[in-house]
Image (tube, rainbow, N blue to C red):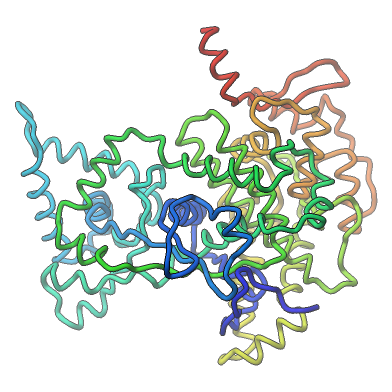
Length: 540
């Protein structure tokens, strides 16, 4: 089996780790799901360039730019720092022992400068500042145990998107830093500890999905129930770009205005962190991941066009990013497993199956099947990392012992990453201990309904289950479960689960997504279209 091809077509470099060689640069266990989304939205909302001469501001490159992507060129994007904003919003929520004296002094200076620009009659300006602090503290995202600058703001607004910032405490202590003017030189913005490039891989998968490959794409899409717009990659790119651009524009304009005011209130800090034309270079994704990238594009386009609350959209986008990472790991794994273990029959376009058990674990047989299915998937991921070509390439490049290298690959990039992402989503339970299995929760089910069915449309229950199977290999009952059991080399069983007793149907009904037409036919609906939203308002 040849080594994975990179997109963009650059040299894979000196990344000896098999996890990076196989899955791209990079999905990493220390990056939370919110930070995957924040990094993706950061790239979408930043000035970007494919060469040094011109930048573009669209969320995604144009069709022409993608088709004529310059050989050997990585995408670059310009990243805002927002150090003043993060200090104002998050210093009070950080660990006391992580607050350097210079940071606390600058925080006081920022408060004084803000107080000087506030115009408020009959109101104590300090009360206004406290209210603003509490407001922005509400947008604290992840990293509660980190220094204030290393935390990530909730990516609801374009003003909250910024790079990772790491305070180099050891160096600052060694050099006896006492003032903010000195301290400003001891922040690092390119260590990739928490913003670890996972969002870049997701972004590049979307770009890669739209490269021209007519016959391959047509053959792939035969298995999917898509609209004419979704089958046309140029039309899909246009609608996706428009939808993604709108994700961070739904907050009141005054919130953005206040955030920008806070961030620029100290001009010297702003100049020191943003004056340079500093562009960040993206990594790469596997070229063959265009299949799951195209499905991701369809699903994001549907989610972005759904008429839902902006905060709920962000929450569901996090679910989508998490599921895409899991899907990417499995799809790429099955391309590089030993050919004798490949399972490419059973109607699985991406060549893997996830057997889902009921959330409560009452169906003992299904619980065991899901656990065994999980073990098979984890073993496949381990085996794929040890593909002959990847193993030999790692031996050549690595400066450490191969066993240690593979321990890191399994723990941070391989099967333990798969488990970690799944557990953070609530897609894999229990969070600790043995017996890992797949389940649904309400957020995952909501995401799947809104992305398997276009807004305002309905599908039969059987068609909905078929879409789950073709998009994600998700098998719950009936024909799909029988095929998934065959994929796992499990014996066929009587799965029972008549329509009336299905836990999936019960969850859909409880969430308001199921319409019963008769005992033999039920529809799953996605009611979140603009037309239905307007009609419901008129009806009210």
